[in-house]
Image 1 (cartoon, rainbow, N blue to C red):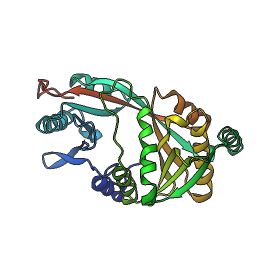
Image 2 (cartoon, rainbow, N blue to C red):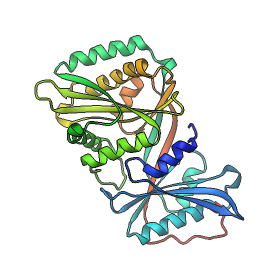
Image 3 (cartoon, rainbow, N blue to C red):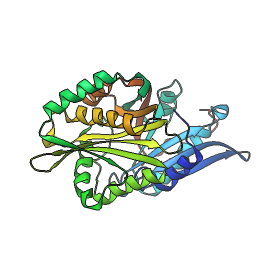
Image 4 (cartoon, rainbow, N blue to C red):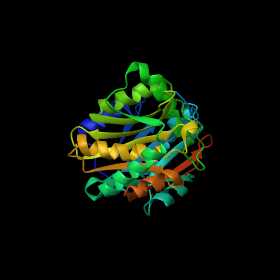
Length: 309
């Protein structure tokens, strides 16, 4: 994965994903930073949960630093009344043994796929777009760069909530809540991290009802890199190939307005068969797999402080 730039990292610690930035921690040994942790919670929903990220420098692993960082984050979660922690880890050899040693149970898996613009079969994309547009003739598409006008925020919040229908496997999580203020906070966060936000929306021609959207953000400092964020279709408007229409429309638009864009990544639950099928149809390729772990932290697990992990 491309490393964060200092500007992007500062924006992440200032804004987070949607206005609730993580708390960032550095772990030191003998005055040298050896690892870091992020501690993320929400005030909108999932008040029982804290989500963590733990990282240790490759040269300083298997000396207990990861354990110390994890224990500190667990204690913080308990002190705040959170009953569950979630932790992500790349699907590599050390990941699951570390999780098992700390009582973390694997609950889900996400796959990271990459759209490489030089590899796109544009004739196929145009053909798929035409087929999807014919199936979705009752809908119009709207392209928008940057922040959403205030008068459209409520409708966008309604579409955004459709992401709750995506599979979450065995994770102990509640549906997320998306009032207009939170949607605005997401846009502010992306722009505050120096990213250019592109959104394609679908609206029903007869009623004007919001039907779906897809979002891609492109880095301002490194315009060759981007990320695919939400793609969602409202439940009452499914069955018209809107997901494929939105994604192909976005690709064709990016070809026009982001000529320096070389690649962008998307994350999907491995079990999200519908969206995975769409991404594979468009030529995304797998670049990594992330495992999601959880456990109840009301009872701390006893650990041997001398055991290297």
